[in-house]
Length: 136
Image (cartoon, rainbow, N blue to C red):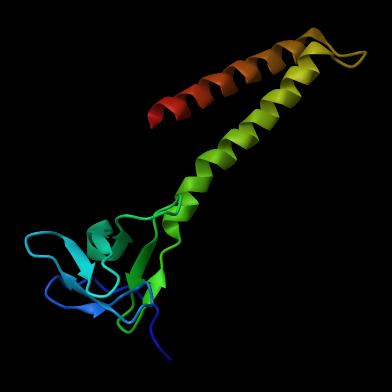
């Protein structure tokens, strides 16, 4: 059984092209990059030498691969990093909408303390969302 553990990429070696075009990627002198001799793609080494990333791409997310010793495996961590902020915005947006709805049209028999707590929660969520947006 083959090991799926990532190996560090050696800058003095050549590897098969991860684009599956039967080419070889070879190191580009004086850089931390590799170039394919067949498809003319350039790959940059990232994450401490364990991941190569396609430099020029038409995809909305950059494609990246990890070397296992025998083959390239697609690195899916870059894709999950792109979806996490979107998921957080949708989640907090839904909570803000529900709290605003509960605050503006409270059901009969609710106390004033519930309205105050809901307004406080809305304020805290808004501050947290602005903090997340400014953190980038």
